[in-house]
Image 1 (cartoon, one colour):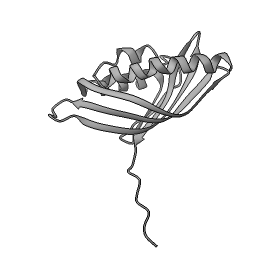
Image 2 (spheres, rainbow, N blue to C red):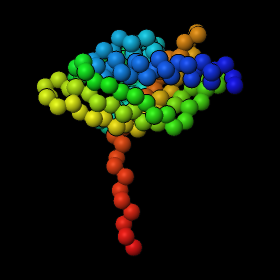
Image 3 (cartoon, rainbow, N blue to C red):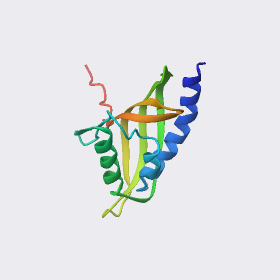
Length: 142
């Protein structure tokens, strides 16, 4: 196993913790793993997108304010890889979130692709694409 892959698999445990903090309204841990310079992109679950590291992180910070303590999140990784300073994972993010102004917790089931690059010894998030996981349609009878 190459060092990048081993390090990235270890890093993904931290990434899962960062996601849990985020759905509790705390964007600070995410600030430790996102790139702060150059190119970055975020394709939002609402359908929009943001470009540029500064604007992407500002969006993450603003969006985290919609969540309240009490939420939880976990990733279901379908595939991941890392080599030559680049890494990605694809899968699902399952979350239950407390949203400002709502009395009931809100479930989130997202399809996610994230891309990371090495900055020194650390992995930095440079792209996130998240959109709602649609319910699988039942096969129609013939």
